[in-house]
Image 1 (cartoon, protein in one colour):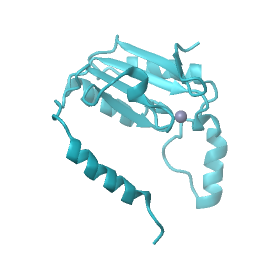
Image 2: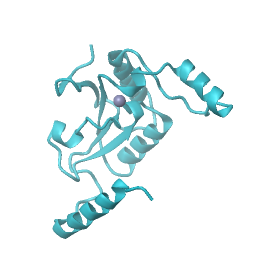
Image 3: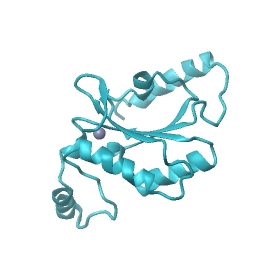
Image 4: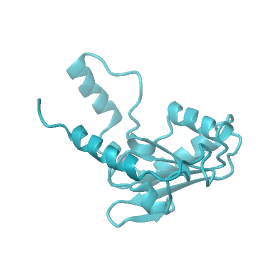
Length: 164
Ligand SMILES: [Zn+2]
């Protein structure tokens, strides 16, 4: 069997448990939920100066607002008492490297069919984050919809900015 990175992870997990401090409340300290991309270059905690227990972090490819992200936000607000939502898209996203239609065609050629979900490909990151903010604000199952902000994180410079 080839060497798996999981062995290293398990080693680190044992060290982590040994130095584990106090447990935290299930309710995020800052009553905040953040939705962002799975991109390995985004250090959400470092970027916003957050600690464990401060916020819900919901991540997927693109940080796009899928039904499942809305599901998580509804639970975050209604069950776990968060109020503010921050959405972070970023430059050089993998979703800018595909075209939805082409990607689906490629899958059809490879597998015989395309999956039922959309991948959420986008070209303009600023437009994408503005759409994401609108989608969250329009979701009537969320009790707190006036404190939704969207930002673009520039992976080239480490800079967070408002969408243009
Ligand atoms: Zn991304």
